[in-house]
Image (cartoon, rainbow, N blue to C red; front, side, top):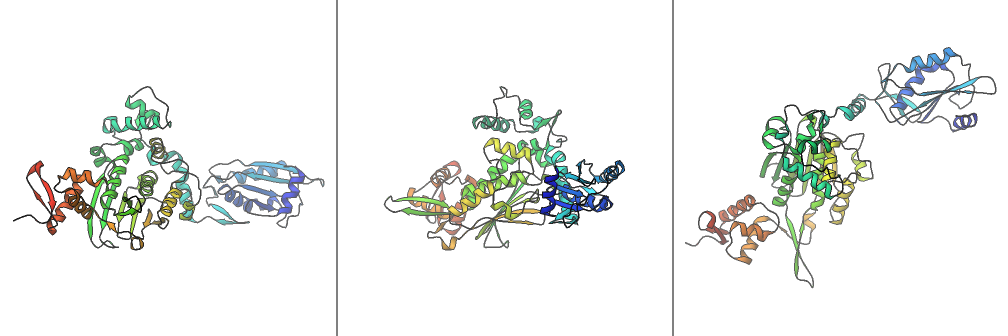
Length: 461
């Protein structure tokens, strides 16, 4: 910094990035500001300019600089800002500390500080703890630790090969010229120093191993009658790797979400429209699997009500993100980098922090409210609301769709019903819906075993 730049800095005055001290006699107070700037955006701490912006300078001897360096040593972790001396025409000098930012949390004499405009204040304890967790996360995050007691045989080899081949097809991974599982895992960054990482177990673990060692690889799904949790229509719990849980979530959506049907004028074709955009729900589940905090247990939950759908996962919004930030462009900083990278290579997510924006756009295109985000009780929750009461077409639930199939096609086997539905509903779900219809006398079965066929109406006596 030259004298012209120094005078310009003095004219602009103090701010979040600039603080003036008349002399190094105020160095303890100045170090609190250095600490605060280290925890924020960085800046300049200047000795020899008054708070009013008057350049006065001071005598600078070797002992003066030593006293500053001694104070800097009380900042933890150790940091080494550039200390510059600028001579003045008067023979005095100004000392400028160039403080880098973007790290932390740093402390000075055991306390942490931050900048609030031109003022230095004590950092609240919850914020300090969050910053400390984020600093440790870079090298000591849960997914990056060895998966104790897990061997390559505990992983689903076909899923690993499928992931690699899909990554190659999408040009997100170079052809490794091998299908050796250990070498593939090394290439994916999931096998290090002779050990599998926790991320590999979460991504590719077999159910038997996950049941005993990683029971928090859990997906809870529930369909409630009405708008509260008074009555279950369906309630499931599944333990599996991320790809298995991702598929189970999609099946649960197909089984329980109503589909609206409309006829296009002049074409006389029926178009089925899901109550919520499937791609938005898919994105939300992928986000939950990639960004949840596996280190604190818990799981992922899906709750479907008549008026909304909620997806929650354990953890917090990381790196200082707020719910409002999710509705504007923001950097992609996944809590589980290895898991997110694998999902990206597989083509399930993109890597540019646009997933939440994509979900909002899809909901808007469907004429639905934007997703809502909450952080409550150690969980991140995303809520999708519907406006089914205002939709111009009726919602058609699975039993009603089955009645349409039987009316149009006559007697059908269960496999034929599943095929005619064309919604991806599972055989088990269709069987349950048929039993509901039989209990109401709306449908009946005839035959035994694999020869069972279903028809409309009550059984003939």
